[in-house]
Structures are given as C-alpha cells and as structure tokens.
Amino acid sequence: MFITLEGPEGSGKTSHIPPLVEYLRGHGYAVFPTREPGGTSIGEQIREILHDLKNAEMHPRTETLLYQAARSQIVEQVIKPRLADGEIVISDRYSDSTIAYQGYGHRQDLEQIRRLVQYATDGLVPHLTVLLDLDVEIGLSRKKKGEEWNRLDAYTVEFHRRVRTGYLNMAKTEPHRWVVVNAEREWDIVQAELRKAIMEKLNP
Ligand code: TMP
Image (cartoon, rainbow, N blue to C red; front, side, top):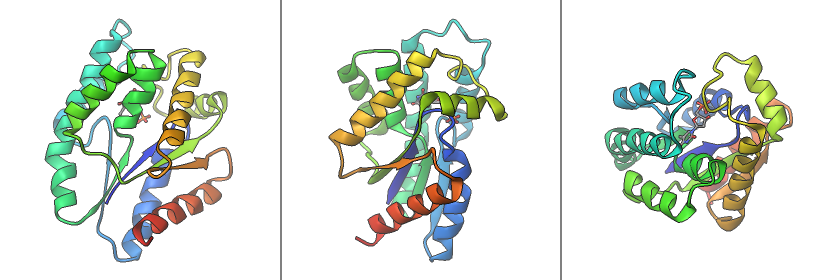
C-alpha cells in the first residue's frame, strides 16, 4: 500500500508522519516513511539545489524537471522495492505536489506536467492521498516560525493560494483516492483523522 501526504506550506505533514508510523507499526504493519524531494542520496542532493534561497533565478521548467529527477530515483530505488516486499510506504509529498506547485502554482500546462509526472513515476499512483488542508496565510505564518524557510516558501501568497486550489481540485476530481483533512484544527484531532483514514483504507 502506497500512501502520500500532501498539503500547502505549514500544514504540519512532517510532524504527523513519525507518530503515524509508530501507530501503524504498533498494529503490526511494516511501514517505511520517506519524503520528497529527497529520500535517496541523489534526491537529497537535488533537494539542496531546489530549496536553496540562492537559486532565485531558477526557471519553473528547470524546477519541474529537478523534482521529476529526484522522483524517478526514489520510485526505482525505494518505493517500488518496498511495495514489492509488501510494506506500507508513506511519503511526505509525491507527484501531486508537482501538479499543485509547478502546474497550478506556476500556471504551467497541466497536461504537459501530468505527462512528465507519468514518465518520472513510471505510472506509480498512490492508493491513498491525504490532503492536510489549511488557509494559506495561516500555513505560511506557521512555516515562518519553523526552522526550514526555503526558496518555494518565498513565492507570493497568490502562488500558494493557487497551490491550495490545485490540491482541492484534485481531491474533488479523484475522490476515491483522496481524503481531505482540515489541518487548521488541533494537532491531536488531525492525527486521529489521519489514522482513521489510513486504517479505513487498510481494512475496507
Ligand atoms: P517541505 O519538505 O517543506 O514540504 O518542502 C518541499 C517543498 O518543495 C515545498 O515547498 C513543496 C515543494 N515541492 C514542489 O514544488 N514540487 C514537488 O514535486 C515536490 C515534491 C515538492
């Protein structure tokens, strides 16, 4: 089972994954957490380039391609082999981030972006994607207080609003794959909803 967590900046995805993994392991599941961009040595090097505030001149197409380069590596090196071993892979972001950020955010042609994503993932689509949804300004102000303020966070609020709209459109278009969780609420409530969504998918 392949599960992805998605959301705009400051949605708290990253803080929810370790307790989620612990909870699922406590229920006897083999779980492997990972993140994008990153999760492999090559991917972490690409992440450095993508997030470096010094790279302000990066063109959206360059950005798009670098995310796909990191993605194809993690798909082949980590995700496919773990899934083949019967593990649950939980990824902090995956291909829907590209549709939301590089597609909706940068207003690039969505069909072209989808084709690139299909190429990078070799067609591997998550079984479940949870969107941690929240108001963009609340999210950005949360993120600003945290430790990792990256090149993409520095895009305009309008960019981040388009990202959120993109996510909500995707969730509406593919309701069998997506679960939307309101991430403006207290952490414990959000964690409980995440656990419920995953357990329901694992035990339909
Ligand atoms: P994060 O680790 O804070 O979620 O940072 C990842 C950043 O990269 C975040 O700003 C979203 C962005 N991103 C994209 O723009 N496209 C992608 O395909 C992925 C995986 C991430």
